[in-house]
Image (cartoon, rainbow, N blue to C red):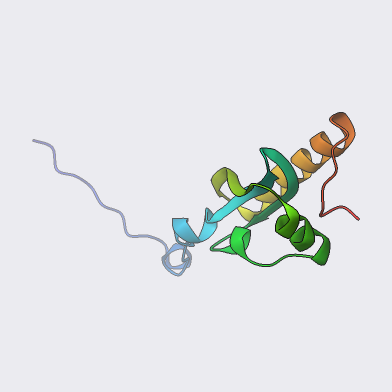
Length: 104
């Protein structure tokens, strides 16, 4: 059986600390829905989707008949979550002519 050969890491590589995977992929994109229709698009981590937002979004949430938080996609980097949020806002606003409370 051949012996395995191990080479020590160069000093510069020994000091590199990589971020934990869960710290990098902890963002998600969410929507607030009323009766199945989105009225707010956001991104965040932890409990962001369930926290208070701008006054207009909060008023819409309080007046909604059937409020629901929908997680669109999770396990994202912050940049990827921002990209998806931008895409969804553009899609709802420009293509589907929908009202979103986070657009003033």
